[in-house]
Length: 314
Image (tube, rainbow, N blue to C red; front, top):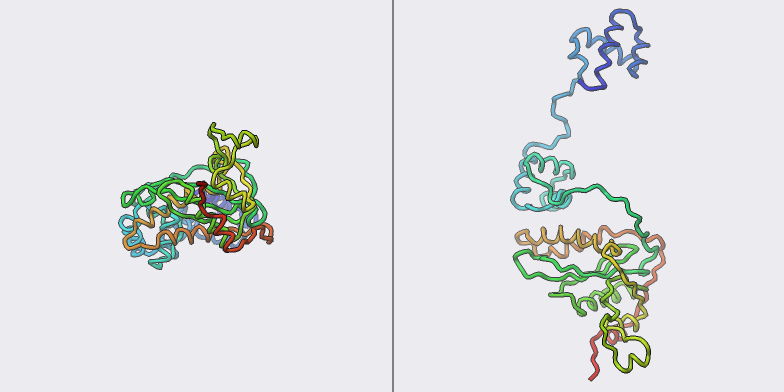
């Protein structure tokens, strides 16, 4: 008997003995007089068992059908091993046309005794920097070396850039972190969306940190930028150095999402477009900027080819 049903027995006994009117009993139990009369009749006929809800112990009308539960359990342990609950829910809806909630998938997983792919932790209270209000005002730049293809391919590095206002990503694979990867995503961003005002990334991307100074640098009083730094200067893009990974939280969370989803999609048999589907998922999570104004600047095709190219002095 629940804590809601325990005090009803005393009030109903008093009402049956004539020590309490129906109105007083209904007021004490916070029920209508009509419902109190029904309870009193059931209590007189069935005793304490009449206080239980009539649907207790019966399966709900909206419960998942046993064949569907069995099918989800089979898919969870075979085809979609290693998928998290949200990702598996989306696959069931898109491919198998099984419209279920994440909580239903979680209950089936717990019934099978399978642990969660990623342990849930309580959110920590942090003072996060608010998003920039306009598209193109700031873009975060980073790389993620990871076994993206698990044991089916080599360890590669994913270069990425994400707009701070809308979380729109641009990504490319490279064998290692290199200048080609940074230039590729910058060229893609400039051609498709426009030139951003500033980039936010690690300290080693633009500014040299070596102790070697040429004679010309000693005369001018500062070191020349790196090759990538010269490209940013030519395009008029500012650069902000991040002193910790947490400073680039938006793109770091993008890596967490892709490391969970992209590797799981790549393991599916016959799934050749796993990378495209993962990118479509990240783009579907993009938000609307606070301001409608677009601060990106478009440059010509010839200017982009001449600036975003590799040149060396002979």
